[in-house]
Amino acid sequence: MEDIIKYFRYAMLFPVILSFFIAIIFIPFLYNGYYGITYGNNGYSLNFGFVWPTPNFTRITSPFGRRNSPTKGASSYHQGIDIAASQGSNVLAIMSGTVIFAGWSGSGGYMIIIEHDKNFDSRYCHLGERLLVTKGQKVYAGQIIATVGPKYVSNGKLNGATTGVHLHLGIRKDGEFINPLQFYNL
Ligand SMILES: [Zn+2]
Image (cartoon, rainbow, N blue to C red; front, side):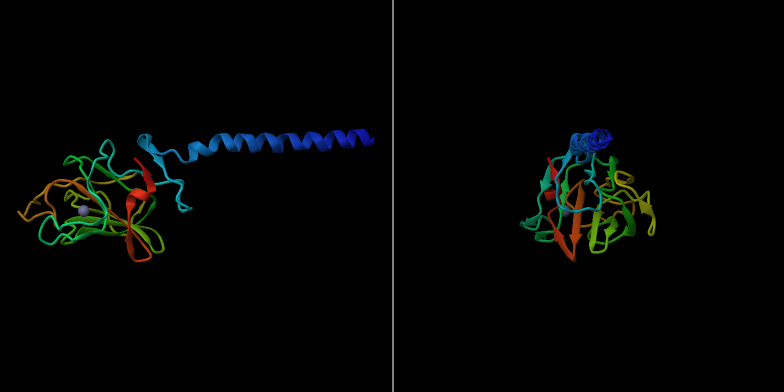
């Protein structure tokens, strides 16, 4: 009788150990995103990672931080990154959340802001006029929300403070802009 109890005790340990190893095998997949980009383990538990907003376009034309203002109205402290992407190409939500702004913004041109969590949002600037989401809408990570806009919008105005076609991605945490690249391994 005692032997049987002993046997079952060890038998029960087996699935526990097995599931532990299965879990270890799957951990890398959780941190692997779309388009072969591996997300940094950044400590945010909002999602498994951040989706790169411009599929097939990864060249940064202007990094985050201090810079010489490239054009009138553009900040000399660059509050995001500029990604060289062709006009009309898709812009994806980097993470799930709720659209809190979608429209004309002035210096950001046509812009979308998505709130991912309290005090954590992302913005996409200089977009095409036909935005694919509206304020209040819930979006998922990787959802196409807009296209990369032209330098000039239909009324002839500059699409925000921009020197050319690109996507500006800004991430704000606790009211301050932080470097989006820290969430990606490009
Ligand atoms: Zn920019």
